[in-house]
Amino acid sequence: MEQASPKLFGVPTGTKLDEMFWKLERGEEGRFMRKPLGGIPYLSVINVTGVPDSGKSVLVEQFAIVQANNGYRVLFVTVESPANFLYTSMKTKAEYLGADFSKVTKNIIVIDASVNEEFRENPKALMDTMAYAIKEKQTNSVIIDSVTGLYEHKEIMARQIVRVFFNFLKRWKQTGIFVSQKRSSHDSDSADAAGGLAVAHIVDGTIVLDKKLIRTRWDVNLYKRPLGSVMRTIRIDGCRLTGHDTRPWVFEISPGGTIEILSPLEELI
Image (tube, rainbow, N blue to C red):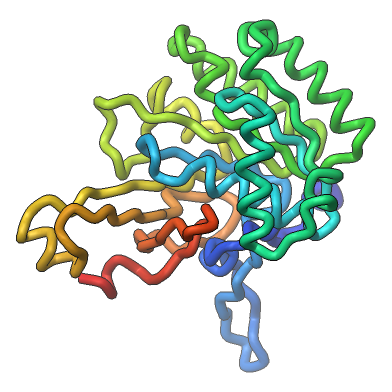
């Protein structure tokens, strides 16, 4: 069992999240110290949830670009946006990040489920195609944006579908990210998403993105932001594999469409 357990190290996202996951190591004096993991835990399956326009797709696209530019292959299952629009979005981000886009396109393998109804309705058909891509292209990571699109009109099956894809990634030894959508009734800063807490209960960890419109004088005084502006936050809600910073952090989406995590919310207030 011990020999089969994966090593604990980080898979870089290209954001400050890489410092927000950590592990304990014993120092010279025998005391345990926190050491940044350097990314999301290797072979973990992480859920990224948030309200619309909170930055979920921006985050996973940036992760894919960073991994691809470092020479690792990523399987990107796009359920919401057609592949040609995904490439356009990634091209801008890659240029802003100083990545080699030819290298990025070579190392990102896209399965377009947005235009293929069978993939959205038949998990086995999608997983068969994913398995072929993983085997033939020797991918290291898998992104599904969004997993909600695979059960959007049958949320009663959310737990079953998420569990199947979670076990699939574990079996194929892939580091995974699921993007999940929130319904309007959900608290914006919770791990809840379409299908209830099915995703959060099954996956290894959840990252919650949120946004708040500065609409009152109280908000202006509290958050030090101009009236009418948008403040976005990111928070690791939980991770069963490693230690992590649980505080909400303020972030911005750069002009190039990338995530820039600035500081803990507590320092802003």
